Length: 259
Image (cartoon, rainbow, N blue to C red; front, side, top):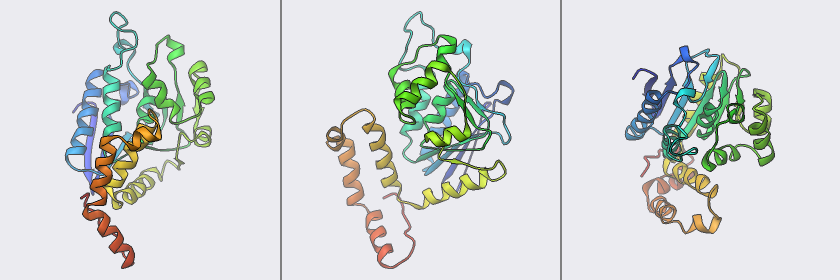
């Protein structure tokens, strides 16, 4: 792959944005490679994906390249354009996805960051949502992704002004889960990933599915969702549930197999 680096170890896949010369702006090939890397992590049964830039990068992601924004000739707000397909692939990954944010995040880069489940940043991390500055429309799915991170009033200010939010403010708003010194962010993210890897993967997958569905549907609708019920039954009748109970009684760490 030309624009994405991939590696995996101990149940954790690392996907690195590797387009520093263009501030990690997302061209169509890069999006295809990113999608391919997430799918590969799923096939390899990774329990955590960490999406990051190269160490010390000043820009984590500058968003979609202007010349590769969707053409308004056919649909001014396409639901299935290339970036959206990549983000859905990330959101549908059954394990946890951590965005390790070093540097600034602009426009569509915010969409990529917000598609992650957990965000860890350095004090140099910043976020700016810029469609109003370039006159680009957003579809409801894009707006909803922002609303899952911040309240509607904050989301509207970010959309309306295009102003940059620094790491301190992002942490206060709940955009960043943690702000960590640059020298410690890799070890911190590794430790966080390790904690997740040790826990029951089917339960994590269920909770992630429920969180995403509750952004779109009522509690009753999600409760009666066939896939939700199927996954709950799989957990209740699976060996991991028995292992978890047994480990608790025996006062030892459980060993979950995702079964």
